[in-house]
Length: 184
Image (cartoon, rainbow, N blue to C red; front, side, top):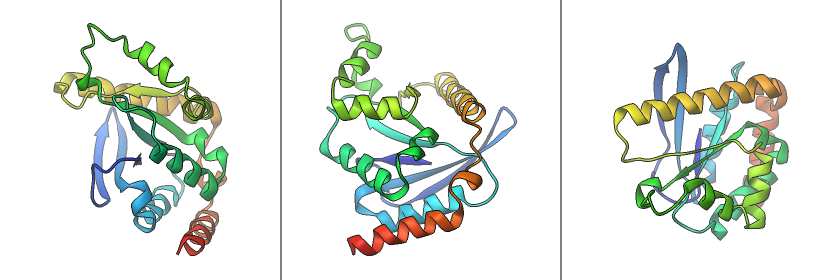
């Protein structure tokens, strides 16, 4: 599931892909802060049942870590608690906006981590992150997906997370609707 702090998608979209004998489901959500009900339903769909999953938080590398991203982190923590970040992988976008000959991307990410919230988020997510280039060719995109699946597999094996056990459907509905009623 992709959670974005900035608006790229205006409604939830679900895509399916088989990659290296793994069935992947991607739920691309609209701006997290403006459509909590739709996103809450997507989270319920994703974590219902007996399947393993990872949540992907997309952050634009080109922009400074903003107040909107901070609000997303606070909202997720409030809805589910900080343990949910054991299921997160950060994906930094905007690589296509950098001249990679002039900028070391790893160095730029480290500089972003000087922001206290970004540093805490990176630590909560177990330092799991990737950098995406939306303008990449198909081989580079396939390599990105392979790396993402590898990180997900390691994360799930390491933490032994089958979300049906950690965050039951009932608990998620309860947390989501408590938060939704409070904000309505």
